[in-house]
Amino acid sequence: MMNCLIRLVADELHPFEIAFFRNLFGLLSILPFALASGFATFQARRPGRLLLAALVNLFSMMANFSALALIPLNEFTALSFTQPLFQTVGAALILGEAVRRWRWAGTLIGFLGVLIVMRPGTEAFTPASLLALFGASTYAAVALIMKQASNESSITAVLYVSFMISCLSLPVAATVWSWPSAYAMAVMAAIGALGTIGWLAFAYAFKLADASAIAPYDFMMRLPFIAVPAYLIFGEVPDPWAWVGAAVIFASSAFVTRAEVKRAG
Image (cartoon, rainbow, N blue to C red; front, side, top):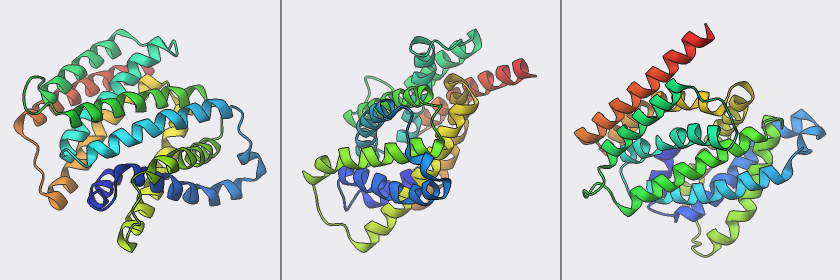
C-alpha cells in the first residue's frame, strides 16, 4: 500500500522530499503510542545503534523511492525480494546466526529467481533496477542492525529512528524542495502512518525470531499484495519472465518455510 501511494505522489514531489515527509508523518503517528507508554519509552538503551539504523535506512529509502518513481511496481517488488536474501546471508556472516542448509538452498534458489526477473544483459536490467537492488541490500543491513537492537522497546526503536531520519533527510530534501499540494500532503500522511505500522510489526518480529527465519514470509506476501493495485491503479502487468522469476522465488520461500515448520514441530 505504501509503495502504491509513493508512486501516486512521485509525479509531484522528488523522492528525497517524499522520504522526509514519510518519516515526519511517521514520527507524528508514533508519538501518541509513545506518550501513552510512559516516559521510559523515550529512553533508548542503544541510541548509537538506532542512529546507525537511521543513517543506513535513509540511504535505503532514497534509493527505493527513486526506483519506485522509475520502474513498474511489479518489477520493483520482485527486485526488492533480494532484501530477505541479503538478510539471510548477513544473519550468518554478521550476526553469527545458525543458518541451516535448507535456508542456504532456498536463498540460492531465490537469487536464481531474481536473476530471471532482472535478466542481466537485456534491456530489463536498467540503472533504476540497480537502485532497487541497492535499496534492498541496505534495507537488509537495517534489518540486521535492528536485530542487534532488539532489546529496545518496539515503540522506542520506531520513535528514535523516525526522528533521526527526519532530521537527517531534511537537509537532503531541501536541495530539491517544492511545496506539496494538499493532496500530496494527505497522501504522504497516509504513507507515514502505513510506514509506522510496518515498522512496529518489523521491530516486534525481531524480538520473536531470527532475522533469517523471518525472511521467507516477506517473499510469499509482498508480490501478491502489490500485483492487484499495480494493475487496477496503474495498469501495470508484469511480463512473463517476472512471473517465472516470482514463481521460483515463491518456491524457494515455500521450501524454507516448510522446513522451518517441520523443525519447530
